[in-house]
Image (cartoon, rainbow, N blue to C red; front, side):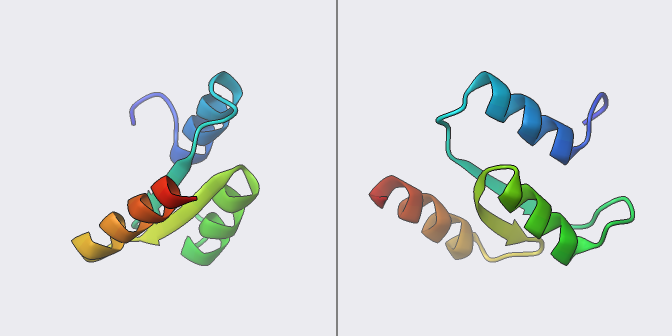
Length: 69
């Protein structure tokens, strides 16, 4: 994203749409490390997280779990 990183995007999205369900995906970060990034996005409100590379089935499963919850 040219104007913001994923953390900023999640915070902005959460502010604008507080009841939305977020599934965060990452393949790397700028210095905080993938495990820390996944912890941070969870604290910011991501309901599920996926680390790239992931199988398409993992994305389907995450979406299905959100639909069913």
